[in-house]
Image 1: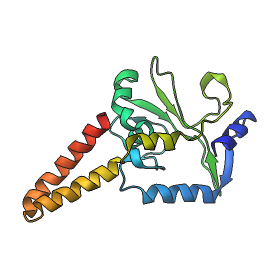
Image 2: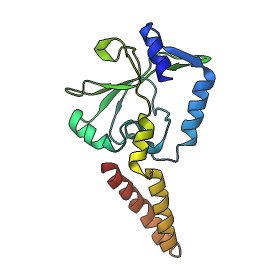
Image 3: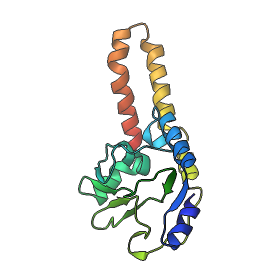
Image 4: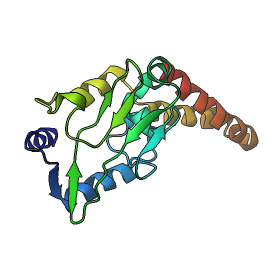
Length: 181
């Protein structure tokens, strides 16, 4: 897909695929909503149009993984503008790559345009990034979260009030610590 998007951009166009591509990506994103954002392979944006990303948003965690907080602290003033595709598609899917621009003075996350900022044209695609990224973690955050919840249930299951009171705060605290590295 990325290679096709780059080829279309060279000709000043967006790559257009049939609606089945969009439907497949949407169905995959919906099937993964129980996973932590860092562990997903697809995501549905929480808003339409252009909007501001914060470090707490699923979109940020999905894109930046465990580097979300450090990236926001070093390269932003608290938010990152997301410049969404400015076109609607009917009976087709518009495919584009995503990139960050200008981290040296204010970061932006671009879903639209075809120019990779001022250089007007992507010339290649790096393959295998997602797979290599996933292998570095060993276990996904979703796996760790679920194992922690199971562990708490096994230990405190006979005391439901205590299990209910502690499981969410302990598990979310563990996931946040792992996110920070």
